[in-house]
Image (cartoon, rainbow, N blue to C red; front, side, top):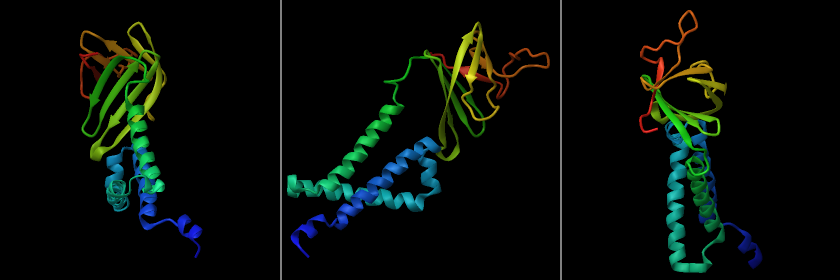
Length: 201
């Protein structure tokens, strides 16, 4: 085997760095599909080994940097650099930096889920649904406010749980969802018939 062929062959530590980095990024992406925790609970036999391999790899790379300095494998550095960039980009995406200003936030809790409705100045609305075992998912929609009504042109949910129109009751600090047989909103607070408007908004 020539010296050139030896240089192109990946070492075991480089293979571990690449595989664990790809696996970790894949796990991070699952946050958009129900949340990282619920995927960890569902596929722990796959994800936990990836986390352990990545932990080993990051320590191995740090030790290599201390001992070898600039001679440290570029493949390992690139793999870990992409993971760091992915984590940074993920947190930036979820931050408020590039989002329109909130004009109202309201919450609803039932036995299994916690819903947080966020209305933004640019007409976008988010419904952050959090449930048991770390389930987390955000639904997006569009809205407009007419008098005391919130009207969704695109509902922030994938079924009829949230209707296309909500009534704003500022005195009670609530967004009412249900109507009576005459088509008028029921404005008596009952379980699961309204969102509570957060007072700090």
